[in-house]
Image 1 (tube, rainbow, N blue to C red):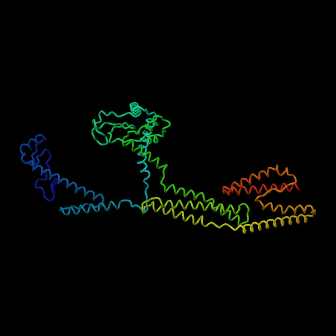
Image 2 (cartoon, one colour):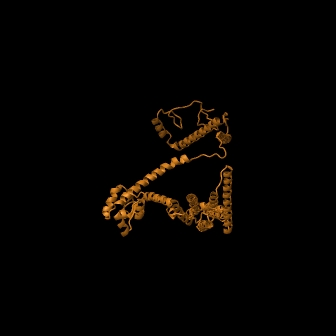
Length: 493
């Protein structure tokens, strides 16, 4: 086995096993002791063999590369598989062994990798924010600087052209164009026909073709500056089509800021109509609950609400249903690409609106019959009066069992006041206090004045269909009526 790494295994070396070192000639292998002697010897003795030398060096580098790569693959195979590498003797066998070792290496690497469980997730939000936030901060800071410069530039802008140019240079320093020969954007040279121009916000240099112009009205909106605060701006807007010269980068930053502001204030028509539908549905929900409460109250014979209240509220709910239906049909008329997600969204909104109208608004219980309501109220009034008479009779019997005697005047007072009390508990609509012997007492009574005020409030609340307020005021009115009746009956007794 030769110790020379550059010798091929297919062509064994005939030289001795001794390793030669030094400044050897690659052809005659003479040791010249220094690089100068080696160069002179090769130029004098082997000048005609230069082509042969190139081929010799090429063969040496090829054999060295092949040997190094084979040793590297064998070492990697031993490190991964842990098994001793087998020696290869032929070129075909070496190539097959190399492919097998590569396959085994990949297989072993995949085996040692950690397996990911099914459904596992990893959040890259933090990495995304670390990349995105510095970029946004840089653009935001640059845009804010441009807005400040734009505000200073427009605030006291002179009318004269020379003074205006001096004002622009004082606000934003311009770059010196003496050393700039080419346009930074298009790389065209400046000359008499292609002059240098400066950006009014960053002071950069560009040609006329690469210049961009921001209208004065848009600039004032971005700078939050009104024309009324600056008379020169107002005159410039009226007399000439004035615009500000900018570079592409500054105009892109300002357009991005303006688009962001418009996106916050302006929304698509589909979103606007859908928000109107959602608002109508939220507003009609209390009315639906109140209508159900009024109908149940009427069937129970209560007199807080009337049949007219239920009819007015039902008409209001019907109008809201018509508005929701019209707006859902309007959504279908908005243009969108066939088969797109927007088209599917419009159909889903229309279907949900139709379903809400059918299930919530058209399925309301019908209004009860007026004659039936009167019968129920009359029956409840009679039951209340009968209960009051029964309670009074039981109280009298208990009083007699206790050993007391009841005079005829007491019976007359109780019997006469019982029906009045029952009528007072039920007849609350269009109620007026019983006329007392003293008219001054009824007029000057603050409770009666309060009753009249509450009746006015109830009338106004019924017109506004605010039935929650109507219910509260009706209950307060009952309490005041009872108090007035008790005071008047005690005064008569």
